Image (cartoon, rainbow over all chains, first blue to last red):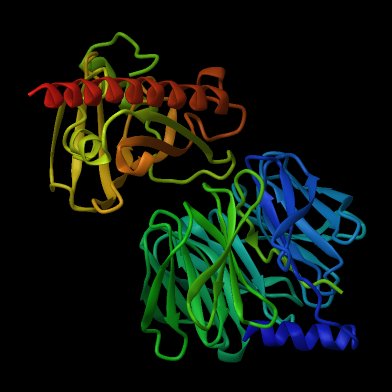
Length: 315
Length: 191
């Protein structure tokens, strides 16, 4: 559903958008670089050194820029996705982890893991323009497609913060399971799904009513959630699996074995494929979102986390 | 096991209380490290699994004098306590066990960083058939954060030290496992 929203938006921006070979930009934390993986040829076509232990990633709505957090370097890199080059860098006064780009191409949001702050960044000026105190250990971030709401997973406080983007103030807190990490927006159902690392479940939160509306048991140490075909796909780090559940019934459908320590996960723009970054085994695996079967295994650099939205729709 | 400080058990416990590590918390200020070591063993996988596949028998790992615990090989129920020659104690929990694939995964619940300079450590041991099942390869894989996950760790608690310690532990363990299994294979062949 999120994909449909994203597609509609992309269509508005660039009316002629031929179906190209999409790419995965994996943040390789151990390798200190980014692999650009061509998903059609299933080959790495470029490697971009970023340093500082990259982890989080977001794409600009026009797909022209990737925003990457370096956790130990404490900066946000702005990468020209076509040129495969770093074109800007914003220093963050904390360990930056989760990152999200707004859907209008204006601001980028970064979570400061230790300082309990969310930073609003102008990526063109390469500077912080506002900051907001959220809960402890903010991790994953997501923005709704209408650009009204921003969600942070405050891991150590077992909660989501719901933030009004216009006033940049927190309007609600919703309790989740233990240690929410990755967050994913489902605009059609006005929900956000949070992977609760320590309680092995996914919290389903209605962001309009600011209520927890469901909890779905998944595998060991879930990390992040992707949506396609009215299903949620959840990476389970310790289990080495992807849990699939139905978005309408919230009932489990299948558990699919993947590589070791699967982390970042995202649906292709047409919703037909799910891509999973396997941190330990250094591969991106593709899952057919309809057949629910692994269809490709593609080597990338060392320690891909791909925490966030790491797929690029190529022109 | 590695870099084992010569200390009494009581001293170890006192140290653990003083250090008070946030073991359950994953720290993202530091980044998670990984180590894989492997070894070829001239014995069929089932024999290797017989020696290495019990969660409650770590006698093949040098330095371990006692394995105690409960829960069999059942993930989430199985916990073990390893007592080292020095008196130091490590407690671990099983979270994945696959006899068919011949692998199991566990995490360390509690260890003194003076014994093993890591935090938030999880690990997998797997026996892989080689040469059509006549011989085996064993892989030991670990994922962990350094001993001090905060910024600017001291040298004995940084990434390099953690990685070196885990490499050394796995090397020592796998070399010993090979020796033990191959001796047993020889003994069974001569009977």
